[in-house]
Length: 230
View 1 (tube, rainbow, N blue to C red):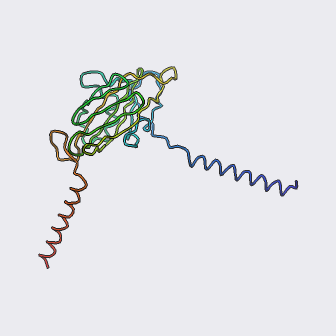
View 2: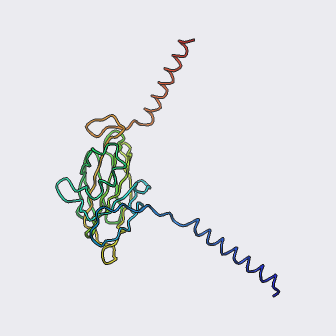
View 3: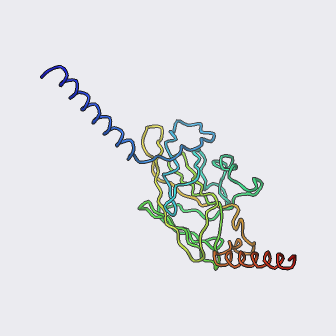
């Protein structure tokens, strides 16, 4: 093989290899954002990312890793994520409310018109039993070993009677570099009914049909004013 042909073959091989690498990068699965680390004093590793817990096919908005057991106390313990999630709060003085605790890998809690379930197969659901759409900041805090990771779903909207499905996984490591065993999970909420009309069940978010009628009404007022000016 002459020199020019050899150089040509090497160039073609390099081009193909570069294309394969580029294709691999283009189709690589995206990875969620790393969690905030809150006062971790033990040697656990915060490998968890926002894609470890999903709801309605969306990753969590943010997550926080700590040594805090969220099930502590009658109202739960939010110190493991409270400061990390303040950036997403409408009013940081508004406290987190306990929706319920699940001590086993499966269970159901009911609170504020919501039914929340956690299943051992790595799935969970949130059902809105009220007659209007609800909006809230929702946290699923999973405790495993001596650590926990809280996952935030900021301004999560749940339609009237709707059930949202999600997934959960423990993806952080303990001191020995292993994934710790499940201990408990706790649900918290804040700003329940944010953007709604208030009320005993957390307020309702206007449905699309109502918004459309409001828009038509506003257009009618504008048209009437223009006619009177003419």
